[in-house]
Amino acid sequence: MKLRFILPLGAFLVMVIFLAIGLKLDPHEVPSPLIGKPAPAFTLPQLHEPQKTFSPADMKGKVWLLNVWASWCASCRQEHVYFTEFARANPNVNLMGLNYKDESDAAMQWLARLGNPYKISIADKDGMAGLDWGVYGVPETFVIDKKGIVRHKQTGPVDVMILQTVITPLIEKLNAEGE
Image (cartoon, rainbow, N blue to C red; front, side):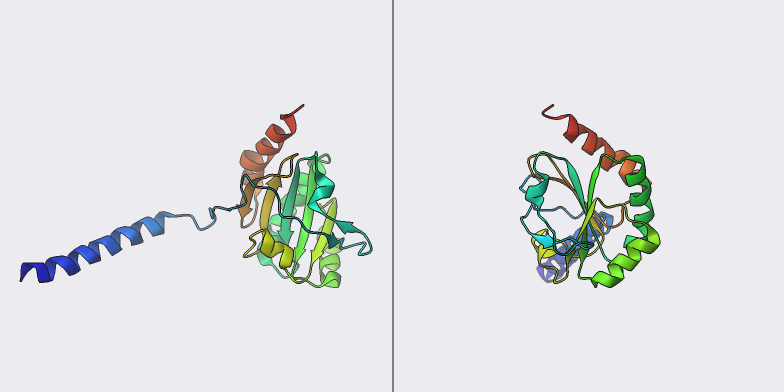
């Protein structure tokens, strides 16, 4: 008779423990299977000059950031001001934009209105490159080292604190490696 009550009680306690652990997790800290692996390859047209293309292979030997954004994304607008300031203060940083599942005209108007922090923006209209990068929502930002290895993924909007405490120190460290 006691076993009849102990088993459900034990199952309930296990569920409560898992729920408590889950509630303490930060949904922005989604680990990426790409960390420590080569950046996924793609060749996409540049947003402003569609006759030209961009590929991660073009960045070999350079540290760079890939910011996945879209004109329809409210969080992208939120972080855009920080990237614009960051690019202005750090002109040697290679900040590339991946315009995700967006209309080119809307994206170009958005950049014209809000400023363009990117050295190059590329158009991923069908979202296939984003899929290869494990993007499940925008914005997302990746830091890639000189060898083309993904070293960091930021899920969600970047702010001043993340730029100052995570991204900038990592870029400086990666630029200093192999000098």
